[in-house]
Image (cartoon, rainbow, N blue to C red):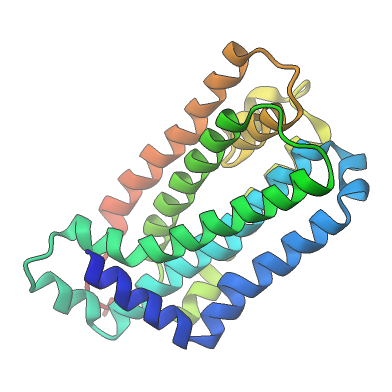
Length: 239
């Protein structure tokens, strides 16, 4: 697993397209949002700004990079060759997505630290950490499911758009309008409950007992996406 992960780090560094789409663009967009945090927080709150930053990094960094990586490794038969080794399927997949996951987590945490420094620190850091980790798990699981429908790295530019745009749109919808109306629908959509959890964690004022159940829908999407991935994922190119 570690050898696969090291190989993926090397590939990420060498691939300029992945560097731009997976590293530069999410950081640039998030940096702009943080720089204009007063404008964006006026629409919702600082918690809303943090949620937008988180999902920008996870959607356009982690999710898109992971899908593109797996489609590329399948196309050049690298996945097929890995399965002929002693490595288990789980260790292969973990090794492939681990570098992008770690990079995205570092990016999200760093940008949130900057947001806390230039604005107001989060009220509940442990709760915020839970929201970030649960959202990361959801995006990784969705990436595995989407990779099963993606035939090539070029195709990934199309197949990743619906989920990437949707989670950011849902985060904006929930962050700006709250959950007083259509609360159940907003929380059940991918990213909805996670956004509310980030807002609660950053802004405070909501009892912990009311915030923790918001983890359930996000973890539910992890289970659903993992089940889809187990049915859709392919180790060899589609014919």
